[in-house]
Image (cartoon, rainbow, N blue to C red):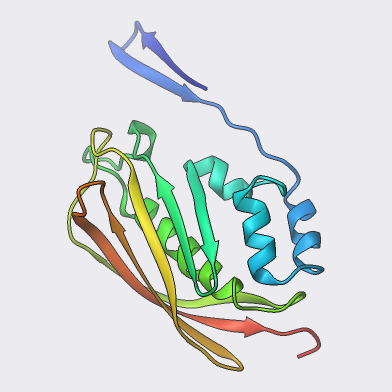
Length: 175
């Protein structure tokens, strides 16, 4: 819920944004019993609650396939940095999420991952008029302990806004 209020002291219009989320441990517990692909498809299909970060940043999972996920975000004013454009952290979070989840699609039940490094290149700035941005995350390599990934963010016209690579460590049970 977004609200616009007039601050009469400073002639500044202040805004309010409210969001809700469900217990993140519901999904975390399910992840221990489902293979990564089925788990992520259940999140995309909203059978399992969205992670709180998704609600906070308004990021939506669109699809999950073996080694590839697609996420979307529509930049809004609440994503702005101090100079009036979308903060790079939104795109970094979007790409980190898509790349990590792409790794998860290839993992068995009870196995997780964590990002070790994230290297982002920003090409073009976004604002609240940009429209939907789509991020495709792909696994480049999945080994026993390390996975490497790639993602890019594009608008509906195919224009590139950012791209990234990351390395993820595979967190296998009992290791």
